[in-house]
Length: 284
Image (cartoon, rainbow, N blue to C red; front, side):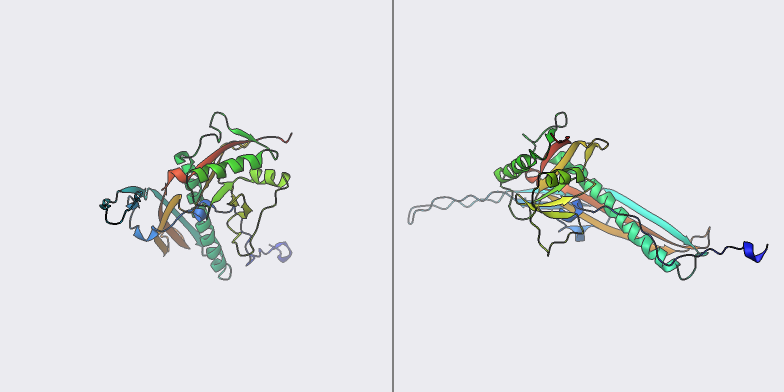
């Protein structure tokens, strides 16, 4: 072959990583119980204390009645198992391989978090606050004209259920965010907030996040969107990376990595989770 016909291939040391959507649902969940996971099928029992009675007291007259504390248990079951495995051939240059491996590890971590986010988003069915917020059969048509009304209604219903004002959140899809923009609503922002997790600002007492993982019944038309709202104690989430191994596959000349992750999520306080069932609607 003539030398002029030889076209060398150049491997760039810089990698073009794919665009990634934000992970939000795992970010707003309570993660206090992660250290208690040891294997798939574990059940973390979370004790909750009932109401403490407060009674009138008259000096030298009242006989104290000592209340026995009632408790209840919420079970967080570690029922999700996910793995990843990938390899890089030895034919890749020594200069490029470390960068490919590092990028692949980041991609594996991102993909795992995305699976977790979608799983938590599916827990909308456990919401205890749904009355007046649309149904699966008849979602509410949302426009820039009525968007504040229904966001305010969600806030009202949370308050009526004694949901703390602090750390309230609402997770919306991109189309809902666009309606806020069309409504010319100014979102309060704080420069100290971490916006890498989809945070777009505060409105009506909510930390607002935008996510492509919001559950939507008909994604092509954004019909039957399930918009969740709660506070930091509403959902409990726990994960554990149980195995991470680098190895040399026998069937190829390559370096490989495999990992096994366990996790589970639970709506620990259903009475603090609201779901607004909404349809995207053209502007009037």
